[in-house]
Amino acid sequence: MLIAALIILILASGGYLLWQRRPADFEAAQEPGGPGEAPPGQVSQEGVPDPGEAAALVAANDLEGKFWLYIRKDRFELSAWNGNVRAALYTVAVGENPGDKERVGDRRTPEGVFRVESIHDSRAWVHDFGDGKGPVEGAYGPFFIRLDTGRWKGIGIHGTHDPSSLGTRTTEGCIRMDNKALLEIVDKAVPGTVVVIEP
Image 1 (spheres, rainbow, N blue to C red):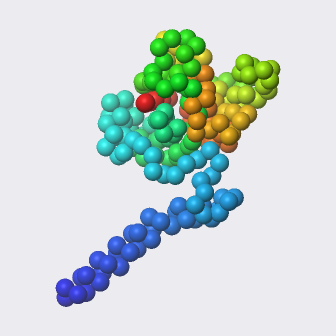
Image 2: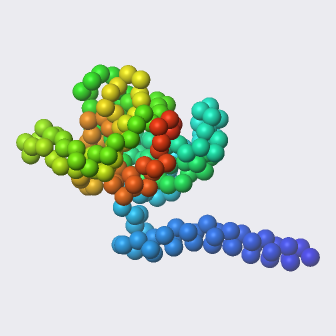
């Protein structure tokens, strides 16, 4: 009887491990570049916050069953959540300088709990990065998700003309992400959506 119970336990554990592995292997096999490579703009599912931190954020901000975004600057990650369940994880670029925003022009991404203020079609927007190349068309990608940070104006989550900049400190304070990844969240990030930005 004990041997039968052990065999069942071992088989169940093996099935669980196989089940846990299969989605990642399947997704990797579907993407260009093959297994082991994350899709463009998306990183491994090993991000933060952990389930306990997520539950605390959900409870503190009344996010049960609601769509919200979590950005971890030091890991260059933006994760999309539905209540306590992480739906997606993406690589982003953040402000060139570390730390919380202190003044206009300091090239830092503000930290705190914010809300989406508005969403703009930014396909026709241009931006001069001051690098001698002049105005760049499509610098903000297809959409600009403007955040209400209370104190700072012009901070948002947007696409990019330069996907190679993702995973770096390079922005003037915004959160920059892959254009395809942005399209996956823009319809859900309606005005009022909570956005948590942590160091």
